[in-house]
Image 1: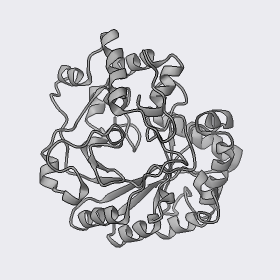
Image 2: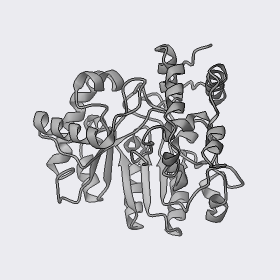
Image 3: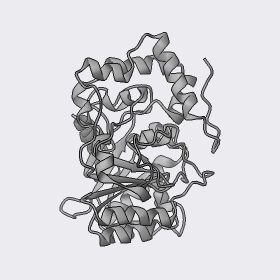
Length: 347
């Protein structure tokens, strides 16, 4: 089996990624995700009314993390334009969608990031930003971000693979743990993560290897105890997210010889209860060019939503809510164990 190989901005095609997964499923005689849904009495996934609009502002990032399903990095050029942002704002102004989830790459590197945040707050939307922490130490342009976040009452969601240096740096790059700790201290200093401050700081845990995350509540307790004891750091909640077998993580699984066993694990731990809470049911993911997807993972696989509305400029809530959610074998990643979403477990 040929190995997937990402090469900076030269992405391996989604078609090749689908082929790699299909080959394993055939060789190991694993049921497809659609077959598994039928076995559990679910013929298809259909959406509920959209509650969250997730906006990917681009793939430019100051880090190159091994598990990144976006394949983001310093060499990426894709960036959401202000025109596309205006289309999103127009939709939000006329809809009951209450939450905007801003992601990237490092979304703060988009030149219109701050303008977008201010406009969203004018619409009285709850705004979340997926901050990688180290961007706060990436130069003068970003050093006042904590104050900007606080002024605009942003909820911060930040990845921290572990509360220990070695495991974090092995996944996200040398020196990332120390910079992340410094960034967390800066956020704590202005109130983020501090009880009764009204400033929410959540952390995200992705496993560093080819295994499912441990229980979210137990890990949260462990993270809080260790970070407070060792560094005096506080945060609100920990979200555990299962690594999706696509992009760089798919490459890691192949190169480490863990692809077949990991896919078998996802299939064996499929949980029909987790299906009911998957993020694609109440979230729309908007790509940097305005394309609409059922979720962030489908976005990276270029699986646009089904039906006639393909771009945010043509948004039609009735058409989108009548669609079927597009699925493939990677969807096992969101439905194994306790489930996985951008907000942690689903059961």
